[in-house]
Image 1 (cartoon, rainbow over the protein chains, first blue to last red):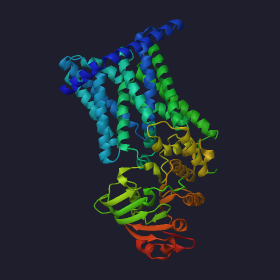
Image 2 (cartoon, one colour; image 1 turned 90 degrees about the vertical axis):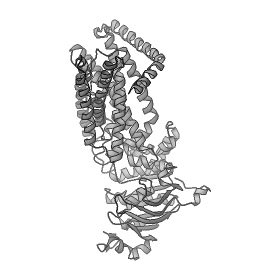
Image 3 (cartoon, chains in turn brown, red; image 1 turned 90 degrees about the horizontal axis):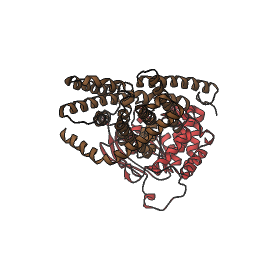
Image 4 (cartoon, chains in turn cyan, green; image 1 turned 180 degrees about the vertical axis):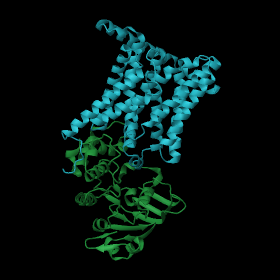
Length: 326
Length: 259
């Protein structure tokens, strides 16, 4: 554990130069948004935390449906939920270590480490048992959450106070540091998906055919779950542990109602997620409601609208019913 | 399609070769001591009763299982090495039905045949051109932008053939491709295969419809754990291999054999 910590500290020191650059970029974004707010007289853009919230929200609304599209169409929607709950254990580990050793590691960093380990564990279980099953996923989910809860209760010195922000997410705690972390996660996820898009699509569509075609399926499955872990931790800041998986699933399900092609579905899910996140954050600011819950409710409303639109589309006979005659 | 043969070493070696191949999911072997070679240009139909290990044999030849003993080679490489897989096209029983409601268009599926060629690179205009050509060859060009789940079973299987063609496959491996496809489309599907074989494609087909195999394939392998027959379709139809492999519940009917 100490080795891991010193490794982490070393890498954090090594990364401090790019960090400064990214922090400056986030600062620029903040200044820009503040200026826009002033010009248009939008009161909520007076606050720096709202600038960060909109940045983080927009990035989440790209990467969550991006990964979610691959997961949902493999019937792996539950995996996001399982990883979110293990990420909670990661947060607890971070808080625990910080209070024990007096260090100042971001709990999100430990959440990433723990969630990635859990992701690989899930893959290992599924590879050895030859199937993703609800039971092993449920076990990982509850183990993660239980571990988090126990670690936090072990350490009652004021820790329980801050726990709600991890469970339900919080707009006002999105610091510049957290925004930078999210920009980095976003860059990693976007880059990896861009490079491996074809392989991921092949595996998602037909795992056996992908294997026959020489795609290293287990490797891509591990990659996919690891990326899911990164996205879940990134989205957790605003969405909270309990609702984060919704961002991986709901916009994707909505897009599937409307899109014919896969690329189209990816694009549509990102657009719908953006609507949900931007509207959700705005509503949550104005009505002082929890951001994660508000975003999910907007997303569900978007989903219902998409279902209705999809039904109307198929009634017009465009693509809905299986074509028996050509 | 690879109509024009290139004079290479691999040209003369068999595309598929199994030696003393034995495999079982549990202690009892499902496939036992199978020896077979498939040469370039052959149209091989594998038949056998349900649970006879035909699909398992195919999976072994494709490298999807590790043999308990014996060897399986594909394109001159051990099947488990997954080498040169752009040369193999694979069509399984329809996987898109029911539970898979994934939004994806016909041309997106066919383009996957180009993925082994493209690797991590970008999909090029040439890839798209070959995709369109493959769709034209199987006669579903007009359905390119349709959602694949909106197609009939027969049209879906044509899509998978097109995927193999787009990938310039030399060997087409089909695992009961006509399950769930209506009778009329099945005939058209076998005609399509005949045309591809005439253009130089090698076909390895697992099929429950013995009549169709006898009618179309150039060689029949009858399997029930072991190989009961391997040879000419006409000789197979006249032999007692079918009765031995299937037991006695086979009726011979006019125009076909039904189990």
